[in-house]
Image (cartoon, rainbow, N blue to C red; front, side, top):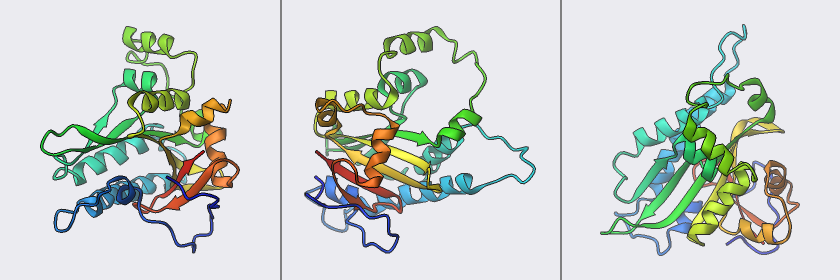
Length: 241
């Protein structure tokens, strides 16, 4: 887990810790079968492609991509890059109903051989800037009004998306990590950041409300014991309580 009493630094010159996948996949697989760099390269490519959308500004303000476009671009780029890794590391995109019920946009899984059973899982929730979420609010569609969507919303109405994903990971156990992936944040709208932990439920036990504000506070070093990781050119805080 995270290093005790460490303080995360936002200084871009600060030397980062080893990548999260290097840490999560211990014992490490010896070369030439080491697939950690391959996974990191795939995610790095997806992140770079997504950043092109985060950086884009239409001078005439006519191009209005959906709020979900960056997430879809990330997943499409990752899947395209990782077709040769599916036997060891797979990616499952959630259906609209699953996104509502579980709070996750997709789940990565490290697979055991030869069974291909999940060894470690990372549930990912993408968080956009609040102003983008308000500006890109899409009109009601037939899909949104479908009975299954309505049922999912009713079943999950008492908790926010962050809490639902923490519950989902906790139900699986300590081998399931929650990764909150920020596509831009208030003081840096053009980069991708994340907070990773398999122990968010401990924060709930301390009567903390898991929401965007709580998670963003990790970047200010106000909560938890955190250490920086740079697994795929995306700044990740790995935290524990």
